[in-house]
Length: 453
Image 1 (cartoon, one colour):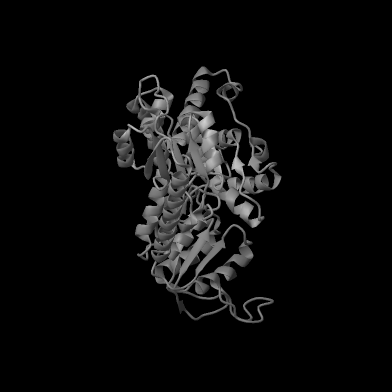
Image 2 (cartoon, rainbow, N blue to C red):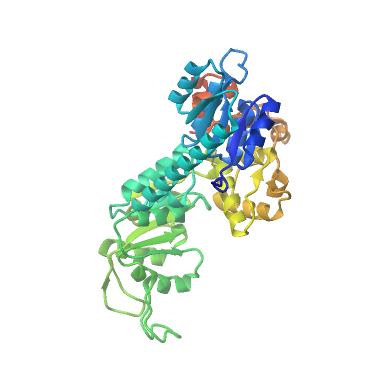
């Protein structure tokens, strides 16, 4: 058997001599190593291993809490599907059984027979692959809207569940979110999870000149204008029986807003230059990064159209608020682009992980995707650094250097500390509070005050 591509083995062992021995005896598997909880978590986040071998007898911390159990708990929080094989002492069966109850895949008593360990690792990989394939098939069968979207963030997962609930209905949906947050991916998922048999058609209302937009949407009859030598079907008619996504709908000119409103009310269209009413059955999904209520107040968007579009409103969080997702997405994009270039998937250096967590992502997922494509091309030794990403880690001192306002400096430092702690614990409030040295209620209060919830 060969190990699954891009799913390395993680060896957690504090005895460096034994760590080398384990790595040597398992040399047919691609592997990475760690010697304590912190390095194990970092390596797990960087490499997303499918299988872990872990010494359950890692030295206890200052509170005499077993580091082995703490490490097992942390790794399974990051990925419950990972297969963890714990290595224990000969007389430590009770703790081994406790580890199994916590979710470990298997346990072996030390000294471990290399052949037995190798067989256990192979079986763990085989089970992991089968479970992943089963999950993939289930997703295909249910037309799961998560198939095109990668996230661990609870807020983004709530968005996906909301879209799954809305999909079987014919309700008009309005997707609100910054540019690059994945609105078209969600709209496509909404269509795929619906009962509609027609096509998914998307049009960017801001990318087409106003003089051409009406004919693009509604189509036109022969002779409607100079150059109209034949009748042409518009995007609305093309999407008949399916889903029409109107991206950047906030930029739709006022005259076309009136025509779109009539279509949403009557469910009929007239082509430009035509007189015949054409009935249309299409589900409309609007999307914009703009504040439509502000545009209504400014007289640039029709209020009646807004309420026609906003039967279901879905607010998509920006990447900077999606806890843990920048690093998770970076791994996925690095693997994808490396495969496209027929290269081995690069790893993320520690400074790259810190830089990804600290960056504010004004361009959201699209910015991250472009950044990783460039980094995969430019990285040396199959390892992506912060320099390859065009980023650098920003210290608390640097964040406060531009201002002498102590309140602003303190708030900036608190915000970054909270975001980093939540990202490193994948949104686990208790663990984040422990990292920050505060109580859970105090962390909740901080998140409310800093508007991070």
